[in-house]
Image (cartoon, rainbow, N blue to C red; front, side, top):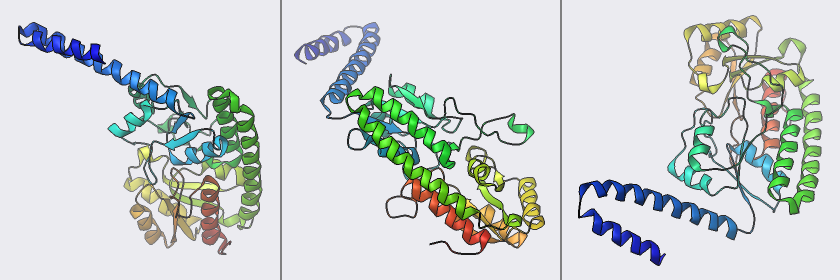
Length: 324
């Protein structure tokens, strides 16, 4: 530190002598600051008693915490209720990311901002949970076979997320690899029970009423697993423009299929969907959670609760009965 102060005094003295040197000074100051910040971050990482992992959104953070237990600290970059598709990272997000040992993202084009963000934050390892997974594709010629990114909405695919996290955490902290493996196995058992629970619950919906209408096409994987037909205003929130053509098409779909209830998601405005309900004669059935958890005091404070909350609303709206 003393040597750094002497260098700065020398540079400041030279700065007063000529204009050319001022450029050198500014460049040198930038290098010194950058190196100092990197050294400080490295020291902080070495001084921590356990690794620090960031996920791109709250649902992934909850899944990761179930694998991590007490061995790894896990936080989400985005907050509860944030729209993650077009999220704009803040300076404090970058500071937090620069201290992370690992960043976990979903992939399949969900986090359009993530790669630029992580490269700006520094040389931090990133794992993509959907790598190697065969995705469902968004329907429609204009989307040119783009993958639907909401794979975690399928409990069976969510178990693949768990496997990837167990592998990544074991590489990050080999001394606790057995703990991560055991935590992952226990958590997957809970997800397996959830899968059975959802399958049995959604089987109660009469075949002619199995049309699930939402704002975002975020339920493709769940619909594929449990035999539902999906309809929506837009395929992903990153393309959430409500055109008259899209709205009219959905209104006609609701009328033709006599859909009793339609829904929207927590991270977008439900105003357009409420207009669809009014124009079609359907009821607006409430708010789903998909891209974000609800927060500790809400109905979807964990990934498992998120799934149960959504299915409870579906049953209330389509099977016309309440599930406790």
